[in-house]
Image (cartoon, rainbow, N blue to C red; front, top):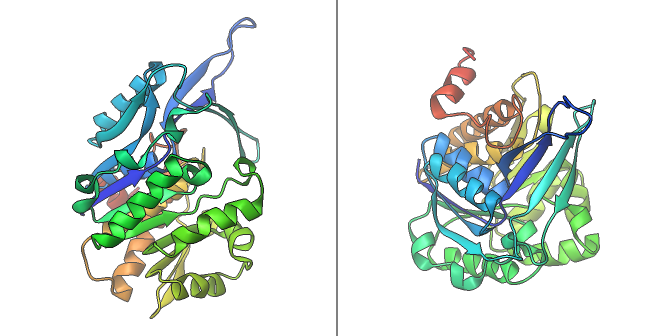
Length: 316
């Protein structure tokens, strides 16, 4: 299943627990952050996985490293930073309708913003089947420069780049700034993954086929669109298609898109991308994404390979 190298942000997601006292407010910390989720999901599905990013020398940094290492993720590319730089926290609220809201607590700079080009080694990338990142590290330097370095090194070494746009509009000064910053990375990407709600703001169209054509014309080999409860869409220059979602009782969709991407990448690593194989990869991605919704937190519900296959066979 190859080796997936993920770069970028990692955070502690903080969930509020049931209150049992008027003078206590209980919380549970769960590791998260899109690229870190992809690394763990890939490891659980049987691939080698590595993560490069930054955490503070604090309680939450220790916790996140333990969590990644317990899943077999290579953390040799993780940098540690002294106070006052700290690991970022994201307080997660899930509404009655299932929608989530996030409140971030970050130092300035935050540890995940300090991944630098010097932290991106040729050894980290040279044997990868895919290098994966999203748009959040592109918000500011030095993390932005580190992502560009990784993408350019991957291109030089013929390592496919998987770019999950993962637009968080509220983090950007403007949508124009987000588009302008993301745009150069689209030209360096082999796989581009977007959510359906990201197509219009980033590409100016909500039509998946049209959006795929725009990205394929810029050099992408595969475009993926996650459709949430509606499934997933895939497109190459030769073929395209969509698959329905697997039905589950959704508890928390955090990390579902990351599980979807990891399910696809692990199946496509180091093989020929025939139409049948890409369709099956997308099916595995939609199944992994569905299972990721069945528990709280981004990493806890991520399926292992055997669980995913049982679920896809109708035994889950």
